[in-house]
Image (cartoon, rainbow over all chains, first blue to last red; front, side, top):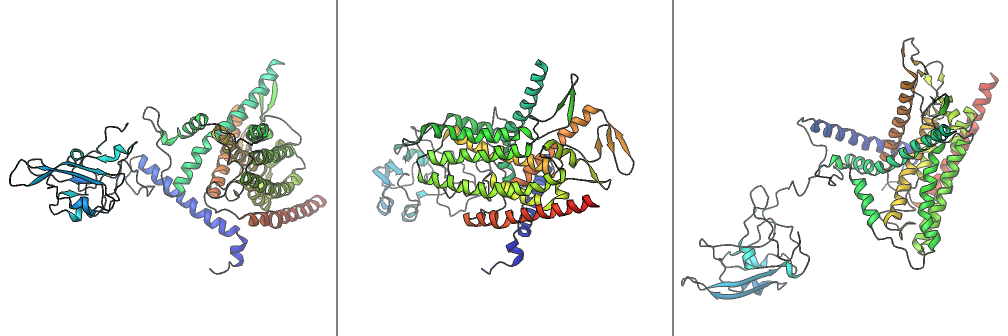
Length: 182
Length: 362
């Protein structure tokens, strides 16, 4: 950084320049807010987004809350091959295999729990799945719980989820565990 | 007798309610103004029955939050001084506004009432005495917390206040010399005169250098950004680390009240106080001959409104400065106070004296 010249070291001129800049922003923005309050169309006075009500569309590559893909009869597409459970670096998936009523399909999970308190959202389970049965495209990021037990999402909860809408807004509500006080 | 008492109480109540309400509002003003300056929207979520009203309920919510928080006192703290410090801070900041005039005299029940909480011949000195005593609260808070960081914060505050107060005192001497009085009412009346028949003799016109010095030193005395190294809310630890709940809130309130006092004082000393240029007791009388006759009560209301408006403008500028400039380093602030503001203020006194002597001998 070059040393300050005399005008900059005098400080007052630079202070007034800075105040002019911020004041210009203030009056420009307050003018825009006023224009919008009176129903005029125009540029917004703020560049921020009112988050829970307004959302920016997430990237389609975003890894959000998992969901289990359903077959046409509503049963999970998962065949309980344990690939995801094996590849999971956080060991947060717990699967119990069971027989599928359809004899053409060998197995299905009777339990498929994901402990989101442990999950690192690496997406390996999605990549490892040979049946494309688990995806991370719900667009849901706001899941929290007052207890560790509440972070465990079961098969039924994961099966009920829909992929994110084209506008970036999640289409299914956040599954609320039984223990969470709302 | 009773009516005199009521009138005195009314004046005091007006000033107190004005200062306290504006102080509460300043938290909102600060948030919203900074947000709009920074292309944001600002706090707007607090609502009562779904009404948000531009976030105006946030000061209320803040107060409720602070009142219901745990009132913590460190085990080794000096109990008396620890409890006393926020009260001392906020008390001296509140009473400092008392001698600032907010309007001309008012005729009530055959009595002439000056619109000023307390009429003092040494009003200027009184305000500075109260503002200087406020530093005791800060030092008490730093010392009694039994916390080394708080102690160092208090010491930084004391050093900053001393260097700022001297520059403030020296910078207003020019104004006092011009008007020949320490009474704020006299100084304000003096600024109501017109130079050469058209230019209002405001302090900012007769003493421009003193105005800049006064505002700079005044911001330092209120310990706000860019002179907030006693506190440094985001990085350094200040003198009220150990305070929580409403005692912490009282320190915040002190900041706001001191800002209002500084704005009121700048208005009275440099921006003409309550008089409106060309407005006399009978109405407007413009230098080009035109005039509008007004009722005396309306004139008084306009003048009080002018004072409040000027204070609001000064507060806006102070907030603008607070949200624009980065913080001075400790040594930079000391150098600015002792090697910048103070010698310039002395030079201003000398030049003012010479000019006044030349003016008087003519």
